[in-house]
Amino acid sequence: METIPLSYYLLLSGFLFVCGVLGFLIKRNIITIFMSIELMLNGVNLSFVAFAAQLHQLSGQVFVFFVMVVAAAEAAVGLAIIIAVYRTRETLNVDQMNLLKL
Amino acid sequence: MRTENQELRTEMLHLLLFLFFGVICVAGAVNLLAQSHPINSALSLIVVMASLAGEYLLLGAEFVAAVQVIVYAGAIMVLFVFVIMLLNAGAEERTRGSRVAILLGVPGVLIGAVLIAWTLLYRANTPLVAIGAEHGGPYRIAMLLFGQFLLPFEITSVLILIAIMGAVVLASRPDAVAKRHETETKAMPELVGAGKEH
Image (cartoon, rainbow over all chains, first blue to last red; front, top):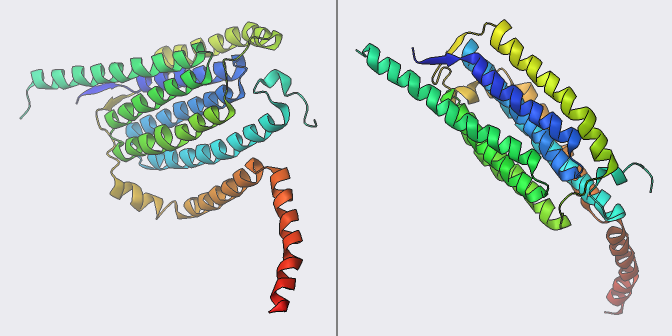
């Protein structure tokens, strides 16, 4: 069989997740923080598909679709929130968004 | 009958393709963090998603790969780029908060990453995966999605509906809505009056 270890895929997935966490922490632009969350979700999707291949269970691939749906819903609502926040505060920097009330 | 030599060659090819897509993926993820302008970050995220589709193809998940390109790299990222353009987002500025986040966040995340890598490489003893190990064509995915996972699928549609309504309500201008409501109520009596004359 033409094979490579499962851990390679999991390492790539973990690296993507860690990059997402790091971006979430160090980025100050709220849109980039949002993109870091998408990066984390992508890392998780890769491990879902890798385990689906290793365990010969197709359910792992079906779960990727649910993650994608949640990501799409989150992106739509989150970007609408960003637009609403920008309208009242005129900034995208999270350091200046420390109050719920204006 | 395949010879040993041929098998070795496909194994090399699998590893090479994995490394090819993996290196592009890692480069895109690092570039996302390194860039200060959000549009550059968005474009490198598209690169990450497209190369992940290649990894999915290597694992045999062809339908997931297609949906990844269409939905993720297509629809969701268009939404992101659209919002970046709409808000005219410029390069982010470095503040005191960002320096604190870098000082505390980078070491903590690095320790976590090294722990994950060490566990996966030396402790986990993971098995081998063949190229295209679990073939996920549209037929088999659909049989699962509309059979075993029918209830989650239906609940997902409710979630999407709520998200659509939430996005419309959040992104609409409250003052514009109020103004239109005002003009509509003002116009109504005139219309009724005009109708009576005829």
